[in-house]
Image 1 (spheres, one colour):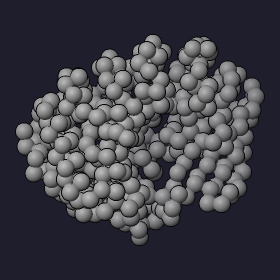
Image 2 (cartoon, rainbow, N blue to C red):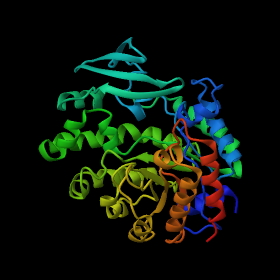
Image 3 (tube, rainbow, N blue to C red):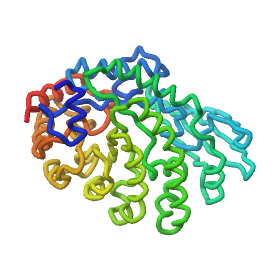
Image 4 (cartoon, one colour):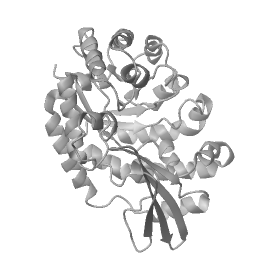
Length: 392
């Protein structure tokens, strides 16, 4: 099998010739900046090509997750309403100021029904590594939600062609060496967290059910055109953020108040056969069975403690029972970044043996993206150990 065939088979729940072994490298900053310091931070396409090059050099199955450059405006992923466009009914003014290494963009959006305000921060965590966050959310009440829902501009006409060009270039570079995923617009609850503060979001299903319902509907509606444009561009898998509705909410609230909206969105994600991969990088074990009802093709990352709560990957695989593919592996901070080569080898062997126990539908990876300061020899030890044990 080619690496592409291997990864696609696993995402569809089938057993390939061996376990796919890949790396999770975010396409900006962090480990990529460590390995390729000469590439400008705003050369997003070049950075994505470097992610591909690095994975090939380490000898793994390539899985590139496109975010920067494709997902423009960044509000789709990092928060706030769209202040990159204007219409007669959506007039935007933005001022920017600095607070140390952080740029803060304060936007005022005037509409016929009222005014919205938001603040978006771009913090340089270290040279070449940026953190993006909406620090003042634009929606705080039903009136704000109705304004955004009625007047926020939809996807611009050029965006579909932009997605085709961008993803076409990345797919050509990957070829049969792997697959191309995109950080597509998040699930509705995660998208809701980009628009309202978390206290409001977490309380709304129980104390403001009408607001919650309308927020979820708005989240699905604003995301769907971008999602479909990415799908039409030929992406291999949609990476869908679902961590905000993770284990801290609990299964009862998730099942009663979130699941129907998340499931409807996943149906749209997968309507043309492209698999969705639901990302919950925190407490996950309480929702293993809920994700069966979600209908998604794959779930990640089943993080071991202390980053997550999956302390027995083999047991988790048995509980999943083939309902969806599982992506999991070793702790990218406490093992890959901070551990010894022997620590990496032991953790890799444990993870791949546990993952293989459930048969097909398993992909081995660091459970989240590689951090700055991760020793190259640790990454190489992970890949080589995994490949030595990858045969079924």
